[in-house]
Image (cartoon, rainbow, N blue to C red; front, top):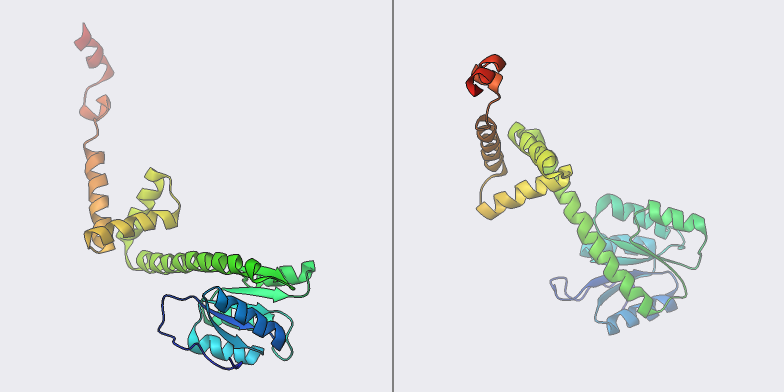
Length: 226
């Protein structure tokens, strides 16, 4: 496969698509061959420029990214990917010092492997990156929905607060409960929120009132017991 060749069929959903990026063509070919043998669909890029082009055009499931490349380094590619996409990426490097590890973490890497590395080590890292990437994607989706819902609906904000207090949940978890219930009922979140608020208000009104609230004084209460 040539370095600028895209995935054969971008519509295939049953195979995980991996973009492998390394300026060492021998390493690139070896990694790509090994990953294909494991059942992945692989595209290759021998430069940072090609990597960015392929990533934006084909939207791979994960990128295996060499750090030390000329012109555009892996760190620069990672920065662009993070800014423009939600594609998870794993760094590959021949350097194992603390500074590189720190930079990899700061750039949002889902994993970090020091070359030389076997395919048997890469596969678990890819699967972990995919799982973590999915979690982060769901979290971002929830955050977006939560921000929109709270901004547009006072009732939703109140309902989330009620669930946080009564169920001891954080804000995201409380919103998830509200959203999931609304979905299960095929109703709008705002409508469910209003229903919850009414139910809480009704329950509060039905609580037994204190003696002072009924107009019975302490003295009258004592006299009634004689």
